[in-house]
Length: 271
Image (cartoon, rainbow, N blue to C red; front, side, top):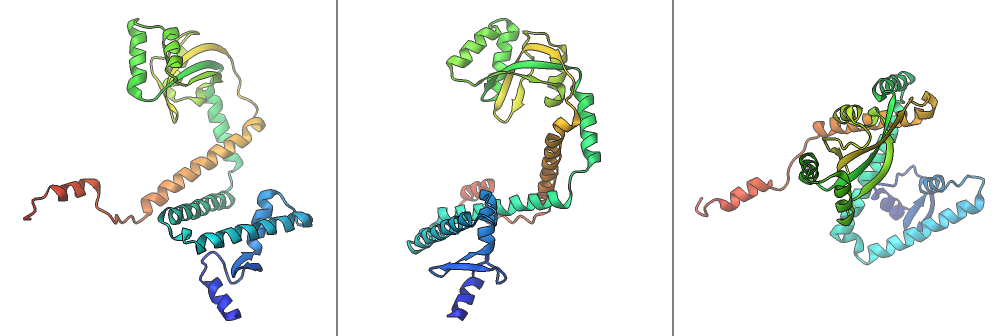
C-alpha cells in the first residue's frame, strides 16, 4: 500500500517527495505547504490552533469536491483543462515576479532618480480636468472637429455624451508628470474652460479633455510617494523582463496562420 501511495504521489507534478503529508483524502494528498500557504493567505498564525484546524478542514473539503469532479469526468473536459492550465501559468508568473523583486530590490538611488525626474517634469501647476470617454479615435476626433468648426460647444458634447451613455469622469487634478508630453504641452497653454485639441488615449478609451481649473502645485515629499515610485519601478522591470523572455522564446506555430490557411483554400484542387 505504501508503494502504491508513493507511486501515486510521484505522478503528481505539484507534490514533491520532500513535502510533509498531513492527510490523504481518498488517496489525494493535503501537504504542509498547502496548509502554510492557506494560513498565510488568511493571516492565520501558528499560535492560532483553531484557525489552523479550520484551514485544514477547508482544504479537506476542497479536495473532496475536487475528487468528486475528477470522478465525474469533469476534469477531462477541454474547458476545465484549459482553465486549470491557465491558473497554473498565472501562479508561476506571479511567483516569478515576486522572486525577481526579491533578487533585485529597488535601490535608493533609483528611487531618488525617479523622484527628481518627476520634480522636473511635474512643474508648478496642477490642472483639474473633466473627460468624456469615447470608444474609438474617429468618434473623439469627430467631436473635436465639431468644436473647432463651431458646430457644437463643450456643453453640447457633454449633454450628448450623457444621453448616449458615454462615461464622463468627474474632474480630477493632474500634473504634467501624469500625462503624455504632448498633452502636457497643451495643458500648459490652455486656460480654464478650454478643451484640448488632442484626445488623451487611455486603456478605457479616447478622452476629450476639458480644463475646469488650475492651481499651484508642489510635488509631495519623497516619503509620501516612495511606495508608489517603488511599485512603478518594479512594474517597469517586470514589463521589460517579460519582453526579454518573449523575444527569447522559441515559438513554434502548430496550426496554419490565417493568411496561409486562406491561401491553401484558394489553391486549385489539381495542385
